[in-house]
Image (cartoon, rainbow, N blue to C red; front, side, top):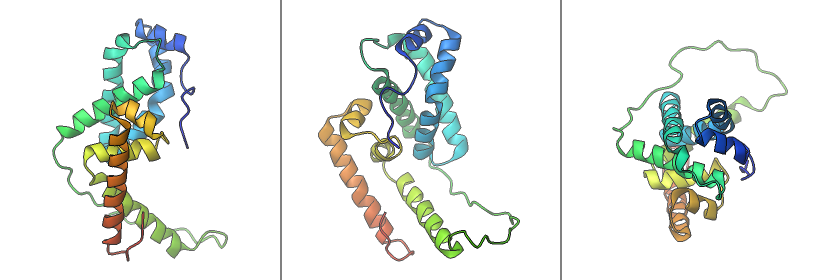
Length: 195
């Protein structure tokens, strides 16, 4: 679902938060926490790391908010703060260890006859997990444009503003990331399904 520029706190809330008003800053955090956490999750690939990154984004925002120019739209500036914090942290991050999920036995309920075919649902879930793993393997710059494009629903122009990059660079990174994902998915043992 695309994120509209108008969604978020009113300009006066941002101005009050920049002046040090705690409740206004809390309103700002509440307005952005879902988008920031979603972006961090897509970039970090796991819940705990995503939550830590999200907290770092808001801590950094608190420190730099007084530099925000109220004559400019807040959403692109906020996205730039978010992506810079996350990319800077990920560049210094050690390699992630692979983690197995679902090690424990979970109780099973009888199948609902109205539900989709369990084999089909399992296949789709497996393919989605594989795609997430392949996205996590992308270089940070490519992963950032993919996350902003498909999780935030941003246009190339908005991504360029958020990352402070030329539009052609964003287009190139999107093109290369899609190509790398397509190749990785075709080589997967699941039979060459496309992302």
